[in-house]
Length: 297
Image (cartoon, rainbow, N blue to C red; front, side, top):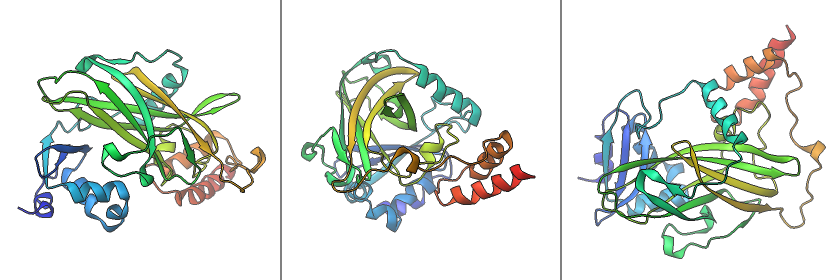
């Protein structure tokens, strides 16, 4: 059966999906609230144009899935939280000054390294990647890669990894994006690596930090830190720098995108209600206008 045809027959239910290559090896694991819709999206023209997705689909020959409980995220580890609860979780992470444990008890693994590379400038094949700690402001996505050393666990183990991206400033570090990547370790795999990326295609992961400020909508020159959590434990950290483009003057702090003029509770409530569920930066101006009008009444 052709891959596209198999995808069209996936169930309309939440679960974990696994792309496999011609040899039956799992090359990508993802999660979805609706399996068929999520996996189908990989075949959209704009998705295939992306280097990472296009390479994945070109290598994929089969797709498998695991159904999960409706009330849980696909891995079964994270119960869906209310939005305010999610923001409280972020605040707790920001206050966490502890050193990474360097271990993941769920698979008895030791952390070997956290490395970074620019997604669009590197091939999908890992052996050909060029790792770095400095990237240009024009970088679309910076990928973090967590390398683990462990024995084969003997059974499938879900491994959701929460990643917080901090911009390190003279006054301290502030979280600018938050993502949860639902990975897993197959029972017969040892010494695995897990990766995800940060970028600025939209404001969704900026909004997930709970901020009420405008998104910068792009990389800001400076130092960044990535903290990785598994089962609410900080297991690893890594750092990289975004370098300013040569010859392009950097804006003064006063030139950065302004915060909403009205900071009242009414403005914040209307703005958040308007933006809820949106992943598009085009909504910012419209929601700010609505919130300003509502706060002025």
